[in-house]
Image (tube, rainbow, N blue to C red):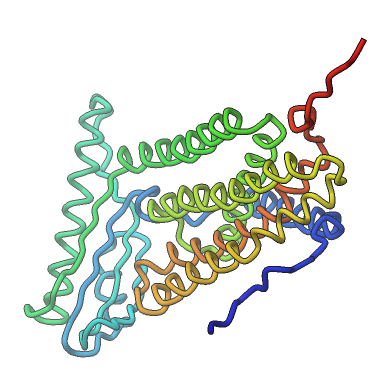
Length: 329
C-alpha cells in the first residue's frame, strides 16, 4: 500500500486556462524587461571585479567593527555580511570590496601594463584587508575564501556567461527540431526564453547578487525546463498516433494529465533538496539555490502552460500520424 501524490485518472482541462496563463506570462515578461532596464542586475564580484574575503572566528564577530576597520583603509565601497554557519560553531562574515584601480600615470602605458597594475592594486587591497582583520580579530582567525577578480577577467566572464546561455538555448533548438517537428521546437524554445527572462527579472527586482553561480543555475534551469517539455511532447506525439480523430486541445489535455504525476513528483523531490540547500547551505549558495527553486517552479509552469498550448497556436501537422488509405480504381 502506498499513497500517490497525483492520481492516474486526473482530467484537468489545462488548455482552457491557457489565456489566463498567457496574460500572466505577458505581465511577468514585460515586468521583467522593465526591471532589467530600470534596476539592472546586481552583478557580483565575478562580473564587476573586486575582492571577496570570507573570514571565520571562534568568537562572535562585530560586523560594525569590521566595517569601520576596513572603511579606514579608503578602498572605496565596502560591504560586510554575516554568515549563518550551520556546519560548525564558528562565527563568519564575508567582506566585499569594490574593484581597485592603480593610480593614473603619464599616459604612456600600454593596455597590458595598465591591466597588470590594476591586478596588483587588487592583490594589495586584499592583503591590506587581511592585515586589518588580523589586527582587529586576532591572528587565530581563519580566512576561508579569498577571491580577487580583476576588470579584464570580469569583462570576459560577462561575455562568456552570456554566450553559454545563448549557446545552450540554440543547441536545444536544434535538438528539438531534429527530434520533433518545427512547431514543437519553436514551442520549446519559447518556453525556455520565457523562463530565462522571468528569472533574470526576479534577480533585477530582488537585487540578489548575480554571479557565476547564477549562470550555472540558468543553464541548469534550461536543461530542467527542456526535460519537462520533452516528456510532455513525447506523450503528445504518441497520442497523435493513437487518437487520430481527437481534437488537438483534448489531446493536449490528455497528454499533460498522463504525465502530470511524473512532473509533480520530479518537481517536489527536486524542491525538497533545494530547500534544504537554501536553509543549510549558507549565504554563499543562497542565490544559486533560490534561482534553482524559482527555476523549477517556472519551468514546470512553462512546460504545461506555455510549451504545450503553443502547439494550438501554430498547429501540428497530423498527416504523418494518419494511416494511409488505399484507393481502388
